[in-house]
Length: 460
Image 1 (cartoon, one colour):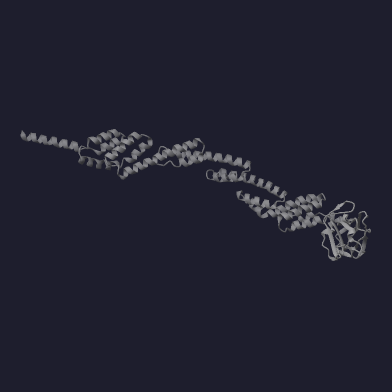
Image 2: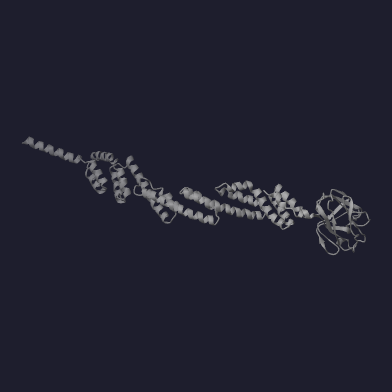
């Protein structure tokens, strides 16, 4: 009887010992997996009535937790692991001493990433609602793939944003093309290529056509103002904005294009027999171009061949003594002239008298030599007289009136057809050659020359 009692007592003691030591870590993690943090905490406290038992249980719990963190992350993402439960779990981690493990540290780091992912998604939605698609895409892109609740939605939202972006870009580009804001339109076309290349390529055709049409108009305005340098600068600025090679090709041909344009303008004047206007147009173009151009030079000479040539503008072939000229000179009756000359010999006292002459090589190109002989206003008190003679190839063609201070102006018109060398001769009459000044003396072209079409020489 005594032996049976002792055996039963030992069995009871062993049972009590197993119950005290028989804490199951899987039960603890079961509570955790079910997010019953309070149950896990109670279970843990009920089974750590000695430091030895605690150490053993902590070790088992730490080992069994490694397979549970991913599930907890999923619960956190789904919103089931709220802040209160998470706080209690962190307390358990500290008490059960698995808070120092790498698995737990990684778990907390992932939660931090998920928090940032949530924040990025919420911020992205705010920008999306404000139609700030650039910012929305940036923040949607910050939603991490591990964030399974929001990641797929974020990817769809990015596609929606890009579609809205493309739509807005297309509208902006079309508006900028209409307002000729080509630099801004070019920039946005490049943006559109990143989201909708097919639509961007369609707009490039429309954009280039508008840019080239505007370039035509602007270059024409530069040409009209004879601002060739401005045209060059403008074309250099807009050529990089053109997707086709049309404007770059025009850069290499701009001088020729300018010349052709100018000659068309000049030819209209020439057709109306306004050769003075035609030659002035070409001369202005020559100055604007700033370089020799055979077509412009040829056209200028052709137009000028229809015009009288003032004697003061010709270089003489030979000269005896002095050729005196005046750009502006008034005669004794108050008439003002702009092309005046006479020939004389100057003595030391400055008096204009003595023999003088000049020979001009005109090579039979002119029909008549015309002008006015008159007394300058400054010689009103001069008591002397003077006259001149005109020779053609050594033959006397004309002798002017003898002019005195009270003489009236006299016009002359001399036939010089076929004359190669024209001589103006002031005899030594001991007078003052200036009294017989030639005003507006000019060589007039042949009528046949006036009917010629100089523009034919300038056809491309």
